Picture 1 (cartoon, rainbow, N blue to C red):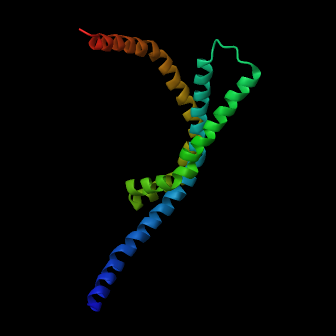
Picture 2 (picture 1 turned 135 degrees about the horizontal axis):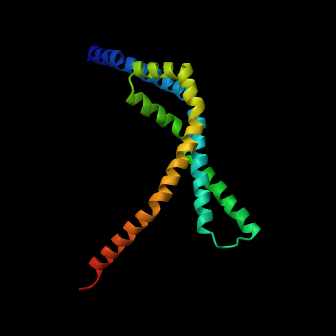
Picture 3 (picture 1 turned 45 degrees about the horizontal axis):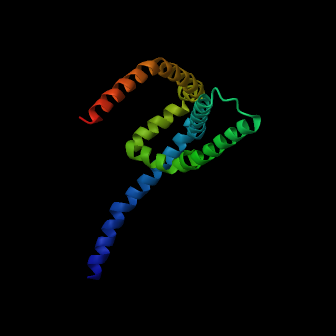
Amino acid sequence: MTKTIGLVLGIFWLVCVPAWADEATKLAKTEELFKLMRMDQMLSQMMDVVMKQTQASTMQRLMGVNLPEHLTAEVEQFQREVGAALDRHIGWDALKEEYGKLYAGAFSEEEIDAIVAFYRSPAGQALVAKQPQLMEESSVIVQRKMEQAAPEVQALMAAWTEKLKAKMAPR
């Protein structure tokens, strides 16, 4: 019985320990990849864009209302609080471990090595350096396109709402 348990534990050790080591190696490599990609900065910049858009939409909802200075300050304070709450839940510190597992599960170790090599290269670093500007400019493009689409979407929503009301009306 003791020999059987020893044999099972030995097999378990031979099979599982290398897998854990491989997983730890992959996670370490994803951490290096995230540093090379400046993932923390990229996520922070994305959050800034989201917060600016939220701020813009909040101010649009309040358009036409002449806010006293103290209320403007309250709106800004509220937005800072929302930003802090979002950062606690979807900021880099909150996501890093899960992103590491995600990338380690999605890519083989060889693929991670190749991706890391790319991000170490001049082309990879050029991408990292230009990414924030590209994100900002692409956000502006999408926002402009959304504004162009808004009348059509509003018309579709109005027609759909009328159609739904007609179906719900008592007969």
